[in-house]
Image (cartoon, rainbow, N blue to C red):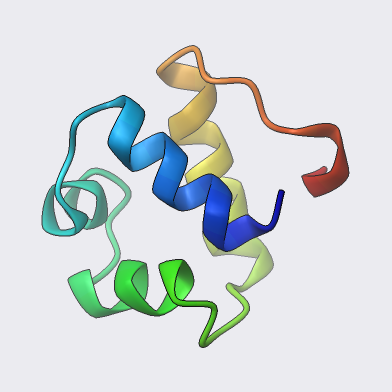
Length: 66
């Protein structure tokens, strides 16, 4: 699974819009959109914020993304 696919799956699992997910992890809507479309590679800090969000919502991070 790619990071983009994981972001999409987390968002859908939690039934969030891109805007809602962006707000939850303090990034812009366009950032989430770019991640999901694979247009950018997120910074290490952004990845950590997203993974922390996942852990807080009891979502396991795939081994290949750690």
